[in-house]
Image (cartoon, rainbow, N blue to C red; front, side):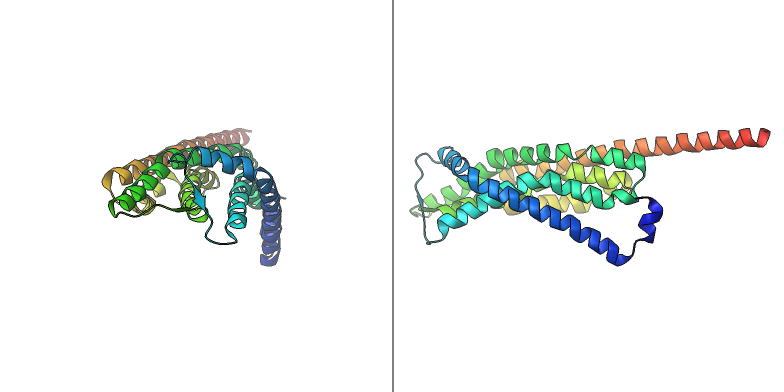
Length: 261
């Protein structure tokens, strides 16, 4: 589909195209959840064996707790499976409005989506989650409370930490993609630095215990992730400018040759 065809598309045609992409994403998410139901048992057993406290016993406080856990695991696994496909569908939606060189430049980011998400899972599970868990455990002991772990509460606590941070790790890919299609640029990102820092520090404070060390251990990597995104955006932006300059010089040379002729 050419740029002219995109311009000729009506609003309803754009909406229809968006609905089709969303429909495909939902299908893959459902298929991923079906896969999640199949592999939930080994993943659940593994997470139980590496829990922060040895020989933790989990309790069900509702008849639906076991089913709820299966649904949570299935959704998370479906999200992991469907994330690269979701980015691919987004790319297909904006692809008609991109130039050929932008199409090739943006599609190459998709394979890194899953890698960054898994890096976020590792960081959130092995760094952030132990901090939050140990803090809440210490508070319970300080207040003389008997710790009884509900399986739903434990895994809800775990997923509420892992999923947001893992999605934040997609920031470099999102920024590079938006830079490639000329929605953002490094100058604009640097101007937004204060707002971005505030948002990332706020996220770090919300998902970690209220102490300076824990907040810093989470907020600082997120800020570095933003700066890394700005740096990657700069690389993409410089290549764009260099390509445009080369194209202008070539055009001027051709124009001079035509005038001499």
